[in-house]
Length: 413
View (spheres, one colour):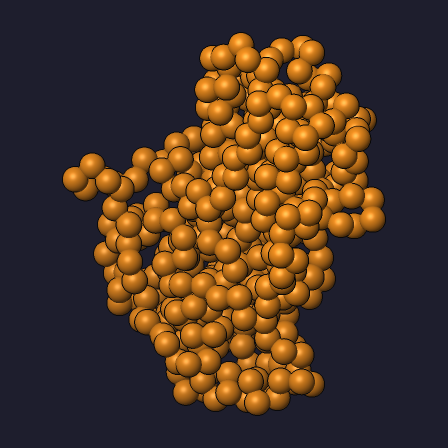
């Protein structure tokens, strides 16, 4: 293998998570490890706000900034994207000649030979496009996609860094909601809306209490099954017959057989820069439906941003694996791997054992992993034991951050 000497750049893209900075810390640690052994990567730059900031040359020297071990530890426990994020989608090579020429100019100016991009599906698309461009223009680079998404919807990898912490927060919060709702005898329905556009992985986590004390939502609805309002009302009435306090977990992206999102009943129908429908109000729409058709007390709760930024309740397993994935990305690139996304392969569930690997990013980008059929019950209104057993190892362990004056310490770059 030819030793490729030069500098590296790392960026974060898409929605933040409680573990995305642990992955960044892993990349930094990987570069520091390489430097200690005479590695080829001399300086690691961080791009502020992903490729958007890279195009504007808004770079920071991470090798210098994180020479101190305590800063790296604090970074691992800091939520959101410390470098800032973006939602910028690179154009196709044929349509964005000027953009790619600008990127090449910046790569040459800073002698960038290694590119690490931490993100979800759209970020893997960016890594795939840059890999293709570097080959066409003849500029030797090693480009690695580093997975991050609370949605857990990237294919090939068993799960994604960031998902375990979000699942831990959801499982904990829903159990707390169930406890709160159980204090009254008045018939009431509480609908908890959970993130998840096309994949219901996060909503599955609402059922984790099943393995602790048996308390879980009465009903769980995922985007993987067509939503039928009449069947939903039938399920709710049946649950109210069993006990007065019904808790329901729903994915924000549930939709009817004709493909219409439930939230579109109230939403604006606007889209983001990637053309995705802006999902909001699914729980509120169902709240109005229950109020109108059943008439009992009903409320909806949208868990919203805390699902992805609750670092005080992060999964230790998730943070540890996030660091491993970041570190593994540097090791793979230094060994000649390029145009790959890092992956987590599950070797065993009990005892839990994983292996860090990688796979061709061009085969992963723009595809989504759904909750499999065996994880959803026959009625389509809950999850199976197999699903809960898959999730449990991912939320294991607690990682207490350093506190100052009663509050967690966060690193701001």
